[in-house]
Length: 426
Image (tube, rainbow, N blue to C red):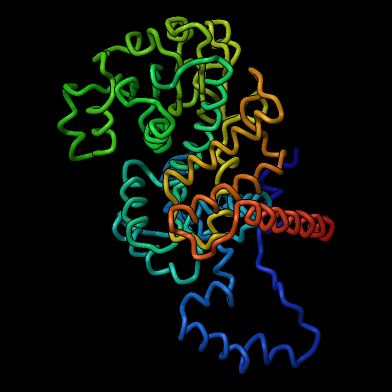
């Protein structure tokens, strides 16, 4: 493998802006810029929605971060986050046919962050929030979703939660478990697991049957720090009040009799112990999603009695990765020119992703598609767009099949274009 520093230096970054209109003669400039461009501007001034027809807004997303929680590297700042955001933009383009612009920003607090994003809304059809420290990431997402008329998404929250949901759906089918009666351990109470708990309730799981574990142990209503959480992290506070009907106070009590554990916490190994897994019910489901090393090695979880194990890594079976979700969600939302992204749209994406795997044939080592099975991206996009129409959030109304075909053609075109780009740069 080429040295990463040399690789990035060779290409001078991973993305660039290229014109998509032909320039065949000097006269073309009169259309591309002055005086012809004024006609497009005047049309938008009369009808702001024409910006979707006459500019890149219909297909462009801003990837916005403050660099406070980057890829397990922590608070490395906006400049150091830029290579990661460039990589994200490349995934948007290759997997979803979406143009994405990295925008690391230097801001002091969450309210300043919100104001910056509000200010750039006119240029973009969607906002992808990325690598923002918890719990302020929850506040930023909620406030922007309330105030903007375009989809706002925090991938560390919603992308990971959506992929997790798809995997859980199929894992429960394989093990013949009932979500309504199932005890689930949520190991880690950060950016991804808090929305994961919420999305689980959308498909039949119950808050009271979950036990959420943070760095201090299980959350429960009368834990000593709960009142403090009310002011410092109301999202975790709400889980403390709603979950853990048993009042489990130790990790062993939390794991005993559980059907599944969803871990998104500290990189391992050894963060989750084999003896804890052995306390779970027969045919236990273990999602150990920390990167780069899962909280417990898959073979250790199996030795302790787990039937299905998923991680965040591509070199193990059942990779649960937000890249399975966000390109398709934005493809569908942009094609519908949606005014937002809701939990129902995410659930539609997860269910479609899970169905794609079932149609190929799920088993213990295949509960969720791989990123190279590109066909599911346009199917998920169609489901998301259809749900946006159903919810009254779409500016464009078409059938699911029509949205699927639009997404398929756009993704295919980009894959062909990028093949040519690779040839040029080699």
